[in-house]
Image (tube, one colour):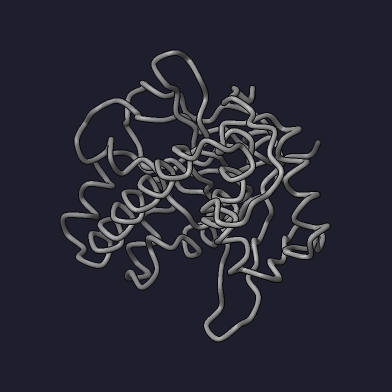
Length: 246
């Protein structure tokens, strides 16, 4: 497959972390950020590796994955174009706490640790965005912990979907843009891919969701929320947690 051609200047300008910064500074960053292409399903970063750079997602999608002490893979969340990753290791100097795997042909930029720290120190706007992102990580981790504590396999899947939806103010429906693959969802819910397929079919059959190409439209957000909390009594195979392999 032909590699994706990236305009470096445009890639820098489109990064959420850099929005509103001086154009002269953005021009400097063009020569500092190192861009790299990764094919679908390729490991981009390894858990435990040295956190020597801040990663910037330019194109494609990545999944953040962690490994438990017994070797089980747990999907944490997704990264899309414009997102950044790795600020924790950049700040505290510790090894990477999770791995990154590409879910599509992907281009990422690596901003050296020294430059990333300088940006956070000298530019309050960048520091604020990093702090807000750290807050989001904590909140997402809390939601994930709650989701994985649910015994029923279907309820865990519904919880992951519920935590992924985007609800527009005043709208009666919600949307999951760039719907994750069933394998990616299985890793996040700690179930098999077959269980995800059955759960999605159940939601579609009951009119809770409908597919629209790469989007999943949630027609009844409140029902999905109730199902995620185990309020709605749904058939469940009581599947024990499994490892979904990369």
